[in-house]
Image 1: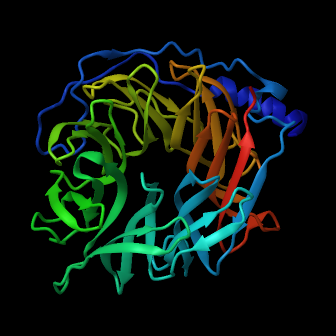
Image 2 (image 1 turned 45 degrees about the vertical axis):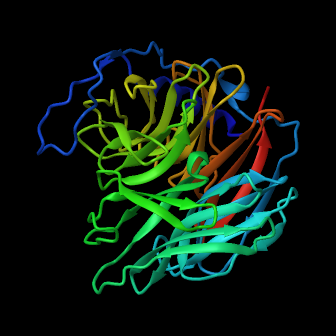
Length: 441
């Protein structure tokens, strides 16, 4: 696919990629003025990666070339940005924003729509100014999406429930009602069986006081009819990004500001444990996964190389952290080369190996291009790379979300793309793109 030169480049890149090894986890400094506080775990984090892959050349590709893939591009006017998506009823329900005047302008329309099993559009929710960040399928076979409405730079927390056909069941809004208050947004959601409803996590923007506790992040409990039962402060102003439920019935929430914050929260909204992980530079969490051994894996990005971060090659690296049920750091690993790499999501296969989805850009190590590209990495249980793949095309892509279908051994990915090529430069507008492909056995 890449020719002899690219094969040499790949081999060279593999030898040059650095992995985190033999890094001791530092103690909490206890300095209240230090906003970049390392974790307070006392165990030593030690990996035994050699820096070499087990598959080189033709076999390093992760996808099965004998199986047919399927894809669809959802096109609207202007720039479109994808966020989370889920699989349901044989198809997919997708979130994001449409029709921004420019990339990340924040002035687009709500994007909430469903695709059938052939990836053809089934329905699309109403278009108003705003953005949806997350969506879940509910136990009664409906969908609940969370995000914000936007009106002249004022953000309104917005939660909607729809039927399987996209018809509105109910909507919930939190308006500021105060001059010069810029409001807030809801960023992730999970069902709360104990309260017979939902836990919505979000953040008030800087300078806001939506719920009487400043711009702290919040936990909002809604009942099954979309009515507020209670709202509580999480106790920090970091952005809530993902949440899962434990076997004991509590919830593990991950957030980021300059560090990654992991909290265990009860169904009543009580924060019973919280820890920070990070470096002296910026660190970001994107996804949390429950592993087969009972631990949790956090997928994210780091710009640092100290404190909890063992290494960094280039500007930013993907960062994987394994924590136990007490939120102690078990092991961690940075993955990357020159330029910028980030981790978006990771899943675990039946054989225990891991599959990470992320972004890479400005890096001749991973792609023969200076544009953004998706990055796929297979790792063993010790977080050491087995093999990896990028398209290597001169097109601009941003990975958003990934789903794994264990029984069918395939993945579906959701990303933004700008694939129109003109003199090897991306064109103006980005669109949502969804594709599924079969993995190699």
